[in-house]
Amino acid sequence: MSRLIDKLTDQAWRHDMGRRFEALADEIFQVIRWVLIVGFADYLARAHDAAILTLTYWALSALLFGYIASRFLLRPEIPLLGNPPGHPGRLAQTALNFLLCVGVFLLTLYAISDLTGAIAAYRGAL
Image (cartoon, rainbow, N blue to C red):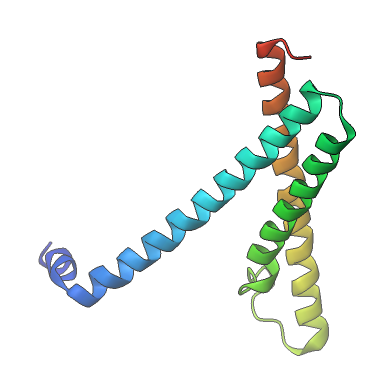
């Protein structure tokens, strides 16, 4: 218990924990913001059968994919294979992270589509 109290009174530890929590909250907020924007564009595209709205939805979906890709590929990769030695190992690590990125993106679009469909049906727009 005294170790916990010591940690909580340590200003450097509190500062580090605050920065980590802030970074996590920022990431969550960014994803929620992108999901809401893409979902609203999907709703508008479904409610009003206009090509420009469908194009807007797909453009925003591409930006969402870019954000997710930046999270999984451009920042430190998720070590699915540990720390593989050599170029082929690192290439396999990157390929697995890319597949994970595509999977997360597809699940996100599926969830957005289902939520948008439910909202549109509830509002009687479709």
